[in-house]
Image (tube, rainbow, N blue to C red; front, side, top):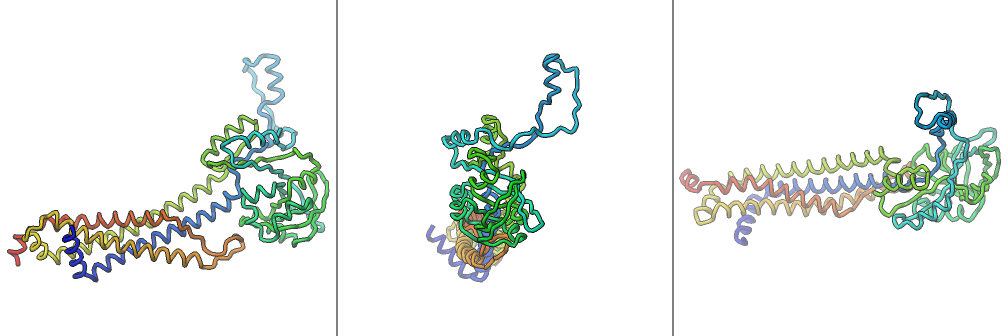
Length: 423
C-alpha cells in the first residue's frame, strides 16, 4: 500500500497544476459550506431568540368566551330530558360570560407544577390593559406584572433592557419599564413620572426605571412591565390575583402534550410554544433546508471538477498505466492508485476549506451590525457549531471518493497490450 501511495503522489506531482485546481475547488466548496451554514444558523438562532427567549413553553390562562351551553338549552333539558333532541335553539349576539380573567386557584396550580419533575420553572404574570395619560392624549398599552428575578433568569429580560437596571424594577413598588416605541411617543426618560389609568378608571403615578426593546416594533409600542405587586395595587386586587402562569419545561418537545394535559387537569386554557410560533418555526426550517441545499450543491460541483481532472489525467497517463500493469500491477492496484490520488486531493482541499471557513466565519462575526430593531446585536451572528465542520469534511471526502471511483475503474480496465502496441 505504501508503494501504491508513493506512485499516486508521483503522479500528483507530475500534474501539480491540475491537482491544485481540483484541491482549490474542494477547498472553496468547504469554505462556502461552513461559512454559509454558520451564518444562516447563527441568523436562525438570533431570530429564534427574539421569539423563543421571551415565550414560555406552556402558557396557562383563562380566556373570555361564551358559555358552550346557553340557559335556554339547560331549561329545555330539565323539562324534556337530555335525550329529547327535537328542538333547535337559535340564539344571536351571544356575549362572553361576565367574569374576571384571573386564574382560579392560581397559587395552588403553581405549587402543583413546581413539584412536577418535568417542569424547570413556573413564573406568574398579571396582565392588564391601561392608558398612559400624556397631556390630553391617552395611549393604549398593556402592562405586565412580572417576578423580575425569574424573568431575568429564564426569559432573558435584562438582555432587552436598553436603559435602566432590572433590579430597580424589583425593588421599587412604583416603577415601570416602558417599551421603546411607547417611551418615544411619550418622550419619557429614566426617572420621569408617568400617569396611568386602568380600565376601571383608577389612576396612579409610576416612575420610569427602564426602557425595554424586544426588536418587534409593534410590540414595543404597547408593552410595558412592572412588578406583580405594583400591578396588583394598581388594579386593587389581592396577592392571589394572577392572569397567567408561564411554564418552562426541561424538554421543550413535551410542550404540546403537556399543554393538553394541564388544560384538562386544571380546567384552564393552555397554549404551547409550538402552536404559538408555528409560522415562525416553519420559516426556520425552510431557511435550514436552503442552507444545506446550497452547501451540498457546492460540494457536488467540486466533485464533478475532480472527476473531469482525473479523467483527463488517465488519458494522459495511459502509457504509464500500461507499464504498471505490464510489470505486474493488477487492475485493483491501479484502481487504488487513482482512488488514493483522488482522496489526497480531497483531504488537502478539505483541510484548507476548514481553515478558510473558520477564518471567514471569524471575519463575518466581527463585521459591525447595528440596528435599532435588534438592540442586543452588535455584529453579524455566527454559529461555530463543530457539526458543520464534520458534515463538510464527511460529505467532501465522500464526494471526492465517488468522483474518483469512476475514473479509477476505467484506469483499472486499461489493456496494456493495446496501449503498448499503439505506441
